[in-house]
Amino acid sequence: MARGIRDKVAILGMGCAKFGERWDKDADSLMLEAYEEAIADAGIETSQIDAAWLGAAFDAVNIGPSGIPLAMALRLNDIGVTKVENYCASGTESFRGAVYAVASGAADIALAMGVEKLKDTGYGGLPVRTRGTTHDMIGVTGSAPGNFAQLASAYRARHGVGADDLKRAMAHVSVKSHANGAKNPKAHLRNTITEEQALNAPMIAAPLGLFDCCGVSDGAACAIVTTPEIAKSLGKTDIVTVKALQLATSNGWELQGSGWNGAYFHTTRIAAAKAYQEAGITDPRNQISLTEVHDCFSITELVTMEDLHISREGEAWRDVLDGMFDADGKIPCQIDGGLKCFGHPIGASGLRMIYENYLQLLGRAGDRQRAEQPVFALSHNLGGMPNQNVSSIAIVGMMGA
Picture 1 (cartoon, helix red, strand yellow):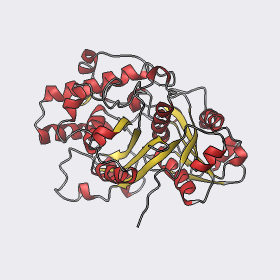
Picture 2: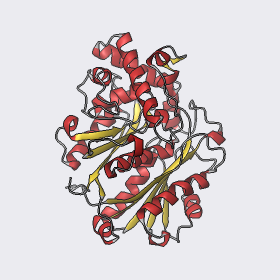
Picture 3: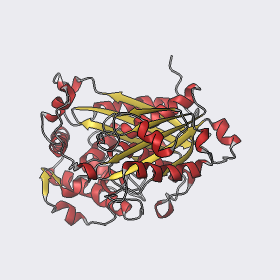
């Protein structure tokens, strides 16, 4: 019977490159930028790292199919380096590899890196890739905005939400994330917007307007993990540990029958239930302190809050409008700006989310710092489309929480 990994792994250090249109940096340089912060934070030498994982999704031009670019960029010392890819959950997938290696005893200290250098590839956020059955299936219904627009329509129909109410809720999501991103020196988009601007923006795929969609970014993020015992031996006193790390992957069920109504993410509900059990959380609405979720589109964030059992089904739009997820709300969401404004270099996003939660737990988030001490901080990645995806959830907190 699975015993879980709660408190078996500590985050020794983390780092994050500035996200944006980084024409001045190649993928190696972005990885190094994130790594230098992480290794300084960890207080160790490169030679102490036993194994590493590299997450990148679409960056075949800059990264290639192996872990060799990470080993070369960081001058890792003849250790195992594994390249992983799981769509937009690739960053969390690299974190999972490093965490599981430490939890199993296979490594004392492991590194996770996520990177994407999308701007140089000409990636515009609307790829149509035909490389095998999976890519063809995902491309059948068109673009990412088109797919997630259908999620919005299905949610509205399922729960009887008025068109204007849902548009106002989505606008609030975007306004909130822009306000948060404006306080973050590493964020890609740091401009504030008004609700009127969001509501009157050019339409991309109805009902999703321009400000309902995240942009295309370059960036990298990094984590170094170890056991709590080793962290203490290295002089760490405030120790952030992994409380849960769960992954759920679509088996095609959503597309193969009439059981799925199109208004939620099935895999997120499965991963959330497993993560809460692993972390010992029984009432997420009152126990989760803050969240970083996969807001590739404003409707995605809104729906995800229900799939995480934080909002009641059909009620997330009300919680959004009530300010529950604002920076000063009960459970801040995207307090760093999220995918929407911090940016979405696909392979780096999952680790960027954990990075912000890590800073918040340690009280190191600067102008964004949550006044109330967080207890459990959750991050959620969604890779793929609403009808076929992978969801990953990481919950972190202080040792002993």
